[in-house]
Length: 370
Image 1 (cartoon, helix red, strand yellow):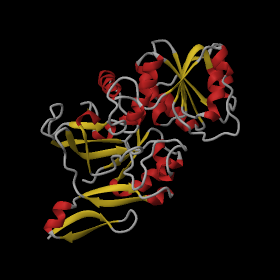
Image 2: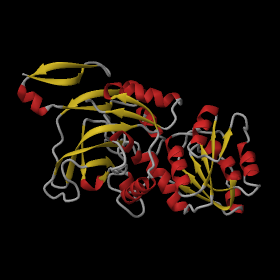
Image 3: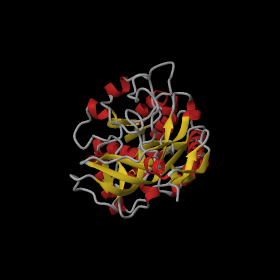
Image 4: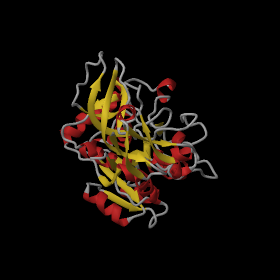
């Protein structure tokens, strides 16, 4: 007889029990799945067979995962009506994980057993412009994600972990950090420019770190003075509490001498876009990333974008090439991701609930069983 650790009993409760050796060889991996669009109650652990890598595949033992705002939407069926979400649940959630290679296919030359790696958000977006087919390979949405003890992806779906980062830190990079990098790459951020960041979530905090490494000035908003103090300690040059300044764009213009900022990392969506437009200089750039404010009754006017020649560009994470460029910048500048709190694998639902509470500063991480 053999013992499987943590096999699911009910909900997210785990137990140990003895099974025959034959069954143990077939079923030895625990994977979380979203069983349907019913909220966090749909998140259930399941025992599945170990993946078997094909000739071009890499099998990885997961060491850590991290959560993004997107992951809160998936238990309810996705972002919005046209979001590409895997049909016919169950869906394995999450896009962000780091681990160690435990097997490679016969045709794999880029990785070896023992390498530390991270999953690429879009499995098949290696470089160039994003295509519709590549959107259909978004982990934890269009296809199964990575909240599993072992993950098998094609070799082009992995990126080597920077030597300077722990597995916990590396697990925070694939979505939020790559999104921030993509925004600045397209916006051509230069030393001495000014960046406006909305809130202190994962993308904004990575953008703060990258902007300061690039020699830019950073203005950041939040409703929490405590979070703004932490942001200032990380290098933010100006902070704005948007509860104190509901018309926060006026404060941005005051800080910039009436000119406006060069770049806005816009994570709020329709509810904040008009103020972001009002905060941006002539010929500036807004990277449209998130929908944190949800739906609004009235669509924002885009006339300021027209009259001030503002570029509003949608950013949807990034390619593997961008991810690899980001990793080099992280090592050169010795950037350490900010982790708010870690949860055990068995506490995955509690990790979701903590992110949902909005109390976090930086990333929420799930650690693999020891």
